[in-house]
Length: 188
Image (cartoon, rainbow, N blue to C red; front, side, top):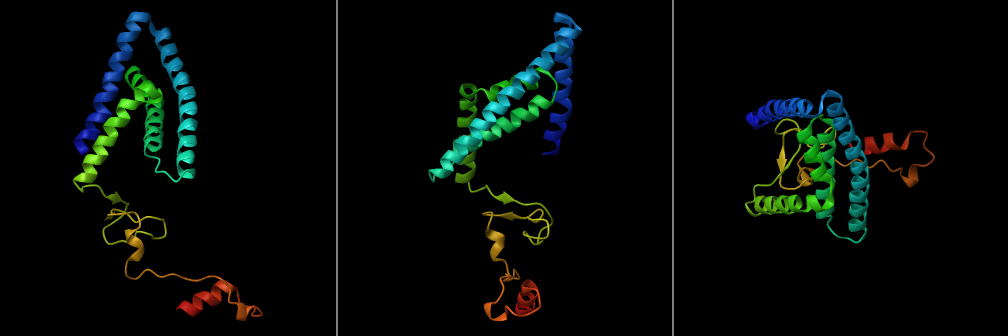
């Protein structure tokens, strides 16, 4: 994984720089800068439109009690396209446009579905949370760090988890003590 990230953060910027230099020799420096700015603006507009559409589709699917698989993949594609648009360059802008235009995005969605189905069939898919092994997955900052579960709710039934009732007791309404303090003392 380290080498993939190293390649991503070194090779992609070098290719982008080479492409920008090449384009600037073809059409001059300022038109190249204008092209980068224009693609960023176009991508931002398309990103806003497609992001809103993906969010509306997710909400529609959930209101119809359906799993929003396609809508979530579309939303992920729009998010990745936004990251690509932040990165100045010709290659990332072209990739972002492919991710933002729905007919161009459809083949990528099919590939992503096949990938996830293959991972699920091989039973190699798990949910990761951050932190150290053995840490409380629902610690003071939400999810724990570095633990893998079969489902995102697997950590809730761990030994030692405690539920604290903070609702006030009806028979203890005239007490001057704060209701949550009384409930905490009762569960201890």
